[in-house]
Image (cartoon, rainbow, N blue to C red):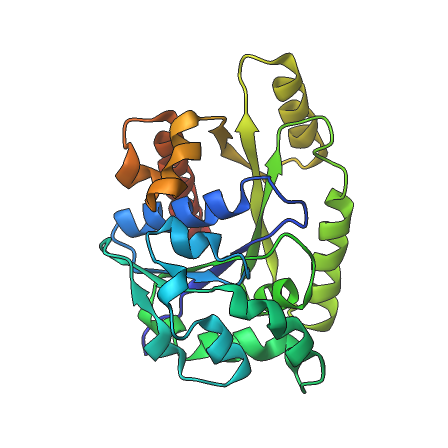
Length: 260
């Protein structure tokens, strides 16, 4: 029997913390390490979809059809043109999914069922969640093995953080007892500012052993890449942003090798 993919969802209910940037670039870097990787976009904004160069305006069918209409997800997967990297895309159709799922039986388990037929085809599945702790995010956490939490190195970083930890505990208790925290990823780090350093130190002291060594810097090239529909390693492999996401991918691969 083929082994099942490791499923990591990228979640934080705060917007603008680098969640989609992390989903797109981590998926691309894992794929660049020749690990077959599926990126799943379950954010109605569809930014992860356009971030890998897929035109969401021409998509006839998306992850919405797998969740709501029970369409075979295998037929919805799009090749990104990058080796080892596929995407299950999203567009604004997904905005209605929350209401449509509300009355369904096992509504929190829909994405888990969708992924069950795909998990043996990939080494990693990376899920980009909406910036809220809604039913789509709960579906992602129920389907995932672990949650990666991007955290911006700024004054209010910890605000609302207890909320996501509380949600993860509830999911562990009610829906997915095996869910782990993959790690906390410090994003938008400015090495020139004392504040950035202070926040990073505070978070590391609060959560010993749970914060990735890799830190994602504030980086112009990283900010430009999505508008070109390219992950950073295909837009500017020499940038600090590319180096940091390659390091994160190495850290995750190494950790998996050590802990299985």
